[in-house]
Image (cartoon, rainbow, N blue to C red; front, side, top):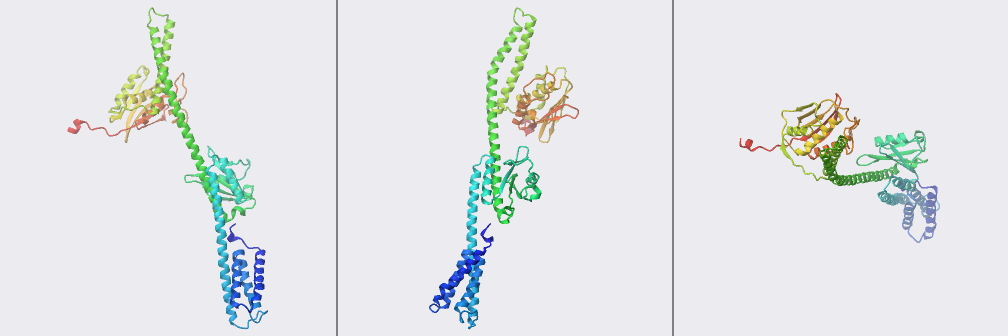
Length: 503
């Protein structure tokens, strides 16, 4: 409680009365030796001292007491409240007014000095708490610092409520499961407004819940409680509690961003190590796989001819080696794309040529399948790397043939504003629920259909290539069943041909 609101006790008034009596006794021997005006100054001095030491209430008592004692002992007729000369009434009035003014000014100065001292002490305490919070590295430490500070300054208990990964509030330290304050704390967290909780509302001690509001969002709730509600309900204590809540919000937000930074750093380091491992393994596997394919081919054409069972085994070895070699090439491509070592060879060219070359590359895989082309007649020329874009279309067509063994495959392309959208649609089972974005992650695969094989790199490579071209790729479920893989490329501004410029 601040000094300006402290009511003086009975002892202070007794001390003021004793000061007046003592002054009278000390100045009585001066009667006749010192002029009465000087004795009045001594009484006024006592009133000022009482105001400084004891406050405004005792100073008022001292003012009236000094006037009465001066009249009784020093003004003729002495030892009587009667006044022989009417001029003394003016003296008494002036003396009383001056005493009251001096007393009030001195008392106000005293209260301001004490208030400034209390504010300085409060600011030092807040600075110390802020310094401790700046060094906290865990929520438990923040809660411990809060509890110590509020216990020492306001004699109240405190609980810190912070959201977890699922945005559920958790008490720090942990409270009993049946804590009746939890619904009210949740309301404060969602609304961002403080709330007073009476004992009957929370089935606990009276409490005050303060939201921890940061510049971006509400980071939690600070709950203070005590059996004596005036310790935190006093309006003059609210600024201190609000300051504590603000400092706590800043500390909690710092912890949050520290965790985010740590996770991002860990993810970046993990990605770097994974890319380095993929690149190293891919390089080391390419040579033995090439040798294995060559030896398998040599066995199938050797003279004299080998038994049919041996030839069949050699062909199986060759097929599996080629499949593994394809996986290794994908790993190497992914490693190059992630490390940024792939330089795009952009050229302005029609999209239809890449579609045709992709179908030609996969002619054997797509043999017997119905392929429908729905390419708009007004497709513009685009600037892209033909080799990489062919890899995107081949991967999408391979996925369509793998996960939809039957049914037609539709390749479509059309303009959409400043973009050109290309899609590959099939009639397969589609992707798993909530898998629209997850299937483009590394080593993620769609639904298991029959004997489909793979390591989940094709779509990740597609996304990396499309994003390198300034586009994006996504997946859609077809209304009639199946999957529609769509990627977009920016149209850009094609160069003006010399013939057109001349014309």
